[in-house]
Image (tube, rainbow over all chains, first blue to last red; front, side):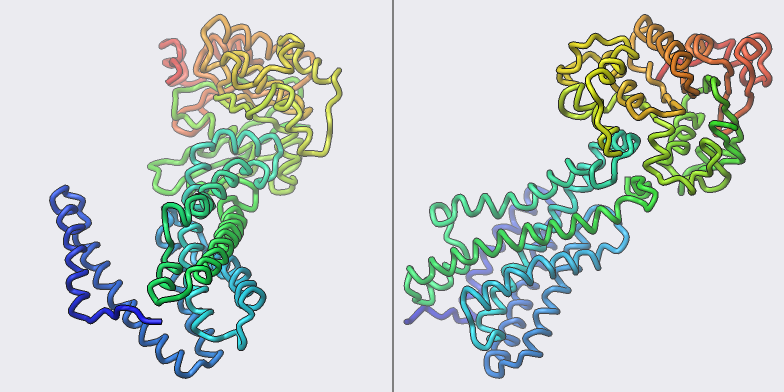
Length: 260
Length: 244
């Protein structure tokens, strides 16, 4: 197996592509110039740091350190997701932490322990990228679910309150909003499954192909990834919406006035 | 026993210049029909939401059937004091499904006779049961919304401007129907309205509200002949206010 290594100098050539994005933002007055610049630098620094951390972990695989890294990744995902919700729901960060953690842990455990049967389970080569993919997708799904939930409740407020006034539970009164939110959160992953391999060769498979892996092997990994992402994304948004519902209604079964 | 009693009820919202509802006291007895009138923004709808416990008062006490609101299981309270909104807010599905919704939340089913009775109560023909609720005219939808609330077997009806989307003849017919219904079913009711004509036709008493406060509560003829406050007098002289 052999592949082309990227010298640091060549990264600068790659960075010129970012300049194109920056130039379009500047010309069209998108006001995203600094975000693109900061994002570019952050991506480089964060990935480089992760490279060092992974390097160290690969040399000395210790379960404690692996778990610590996963916990940090989870916390950052939850923090980021909470910040991207358009409303100040009480206890949001904790809800995100629990929802994304719950949504990610079940598919990660399934893949590591049952599908790949990695021994020992904490081999960073497997668990870190698998968890990273799930956390990233679960984070985006949780944000989609949360924002859609709040938007639907605003839109359907009359209907929700009419149901409450007829003696319905908050769960029953908000069932339609919850369905829409779950659908919105699952849609990108489900749509991706529809076109994967035809339109898009996803990151993990691309990486394995470039690293010289047998395409058949790379494909099987990717299939596993798609299945686990569907699971993680729906579990995380389901859990988040269950917690958000508690936070959106008061104990007297009213829509929390400060949110609407 | 008072069906409804409010004592010093105030409801404030953070950031608002004044309370939505301020120091409101009011009683309603069996057979009472109270027309709650006043300019828009007076706090009339907010008051009904407080009684149905869709909003929470900041101070004061509300009693329904002699029991203070916090002592009620909230879903039972909402069935006992049914609220009909300004917009019908019917659910997707047939009229039948809409009528069955409320009782189903309490684990009750309605038989065909009762469903037809509910339609008759709001002057709708039996064929309406199978119609798509949201495809009906706004006037018909408002009647279905009313029947949906009646299906809860409430003791008290809270009507938040149910006539506001209707043209004058339909609005008049609905108010007339409400009066007959309350009499026939011995229901007490509060009707929020902008229109003096409806207040006169509906109420046994009239409460005039402005700036979050109740300024006058009088028997209906007395209210129109000699209103208890200057503001109410002006309101009557101006012919009330059209719906916004």
